[in-house]
Image 1 (cartoon, one colour):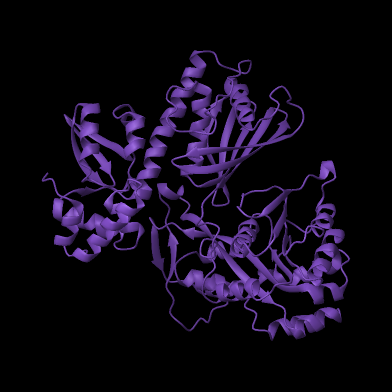
Image 2: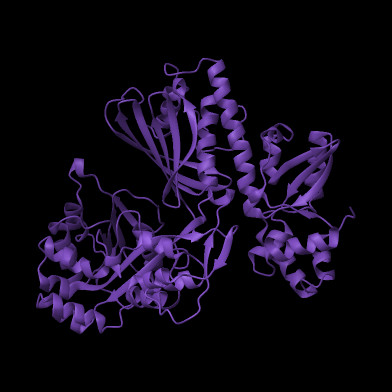
Length: 566
C-alpha cells in the first residue's frame, strides 16, 4: 500500500478543500491531545465518518468490515495482546497463512500497523471499520476473553468463598490490569462490558447453582453471562471493597460508591447489596460523567418543546417548576440539565438530593440522610436561611416538603423539583391529594414537565415499512394518508431487539391565568378545559413526531406511554 497522508487523500478526492484541510490541521495543533486528523475532521463536522470510509475504500481499495454483523472468533484474542488492541483501538479479524487482517478505524496509521506486525510477526492487511463498532468489538472480545481467563485462574488457584482479594490503590482505574489478581480482572471485565453496552445497571444475582450477571440496557434487563457458584464470595467481596462497605457483614443491606475510569471516561458507581436466600445480591448503577448528556439536546429536547423549556426556566426568577413521570423516565437527567443551565456566578444555588448522582461545580449539593434526621423537609427549612436564589429539591414525597417548597417559591425563590405522577395534568391532583392547598399550587407553580423514555431504532438493522390501520389508530393519525414508518429487524449490536439507545419524549404545561383560576376554584372540569385551550401538546404528539422521523416505533410508544397519558 502506498504511504498516503490522509489530508492529501481527502483533498485529491474532492471530499474537502485545501482551506478545510488547513482549518482541520490548525484545530489539531491547537487541541494538542494527539487526536488523529480523521477524528478532528469528523468531530468538527467537516466530514462524516461515512465519507471518510468511502474515500479510503475507493482510493486505497481498503476492505470495509461491518463489525456489528461479524462474529470475531474468541481465539483472535490470543493473536494480538489486549494492551495493543486497546491502545490503538484495533482488532484482529482473521489470520490467513502469514497475513493478519486487522480492523482499523484509521488504516493509514502506519505506526500502529508496524507495532502490530512486530507483536504478531505477521503481515498486516488493514480493513476499515466504524469507530462505534470497533469500540464495542474490542471490548466484547477482550472483556469476554478476560473474564473467562480470570474465572479459569480463580478456579485453578482455588479462589472461592473463603478467599478475599484486598483492594489496591488502582481501584479507580480499570485499564491495563493484566497483572492484577484474577478476581479484580473479572470484576473489571464485568464493568467494562457494562460501559461498552451502555448499561445503566449491573445486577449480580446469586442463584442456587450459579451467579447470574445481568445488565439493564436501554431500560431492559439482559442476561450477559454466569459466574460459577464457588466464586460468588470473592466477586461479591471485591465489589464491596470497591464501595468501601463492610465485607464481614452479609445479613443487612449496605450502600457504597466509587469512581472508576474506563477508556478515558469517568464513571461513578453506586453500589448496593441485598441479602437473599442464596447470598448477597449486588447492583451497581453506572453514572457516566458525560457533558453532552446533561444538555437540552442530550436529553432529547428539540423544536417547540425546547423553546417552551427555555421560556419556562429563563423567564421565571421565582416559582416552582415540576418534572414528573414514573420511575426510570429520565427525570433526574432533566433536573440536572436545568441545574447546569441555571448555574451562574450571579446566583446561589442549593440542591437537596437523595442520592447526589452528579457533582456540579458551583452548586451547593446536599446529600439527604433520613436516618440521621436530614430529611427533605428539615433540610429545606435550613436552606431557606442560606440566602438561596435557586433551590433544587430532589423529590417531593410528602405534604410537608411540598408546602415548604411552594411557600418558598411564593417568597421569591425559584424551586425545581420532581414528583412521581403519570402526566402533567395528574400532578395537580397529586399535590391536592397530599394535602397542598389550591391557593399554594395556583400561586407558585409556573409549569410542569412530564416525560417518558422511548427506545430508539437500532441504526444497523433499521428498515422501512407501511403501517397498518391499527398502528395509525394507536398514534391517532388520519388513515387517508400514506406513511412510511421504520423498525429494527434485530442484529448483534442491539441484542436482536431492534432498539439501541433511548430518547426522552415530553409534554410541557405552562400555567396561565385560566389554569391558575381553575386550580384555585378546585374545579377539575374547568381545569381540563383551560389546559385544552392553552395550546398544550400532549406527549403523544411528541411520540408521533419521533415515529414519523424514524427514531422510534409505534410498538415502543405503546409500551412506554399508556393510553391514559394521551
